Image (cartoon, rainbow, N blue to C red):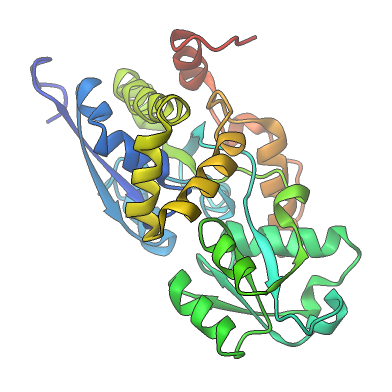
Length: 309
């Protein structure tokens, strides 16, 4: 099907992602601002949780996953022939926000702590790593997954949750409501947040297409830096938030989305550490090349004017 397409036609590609969030912003922006189509692609963005999207990628029902994290890396290690080809960012944005009466992290032991994205996803794993980093036993904390951020915030406000892992724009809302930051996970953990994963055979057989997808999302990141107004509008739409929170979020994002898009060794190493901590793999001793392929992202970075070694 793909081979016989005339070049004048747009290549159809499907990208699965976990839902509208800051992590997905480059994909949503590339679609909204018609960057996919400028790069010769007709992209379909499909919302799927990783439990569905990873088997879908493996079965070639979707060509790309909008994400690089513990779920995608452990799938690669289990034998799905996929690679991380682009990083959206290597900084997480979460803070662990608690009820005002909580004094220390120890007060939160065995009390319900909310996360979104599912157990084993980036937010959960970043929290476990941050707790271990400050000398806490991460197994002593009771973690409760929520499907949506708004449900989790309601549970926090009602007092059902003692704490929750929250990122902008909602972070500014809970700070305004008097909740207390117990752990600034963002400052402690360097881990890929969002990115692009695809099958090795797609990289080998359709490198131009993969390059076009990478170029579209990296151009979206570049454009976010240049056009604050447009980006704030998009954050308000996606985050269902007011202008003030969207503006604060934009300022946070500038730092987070600064990278040139190439997968980093440090980022992958942190994912492997997280998988060891969860008992999903035995050792971090896995060759970087078995998980990530940086060649196409490097070519795109050069083309877009980044200074690349």
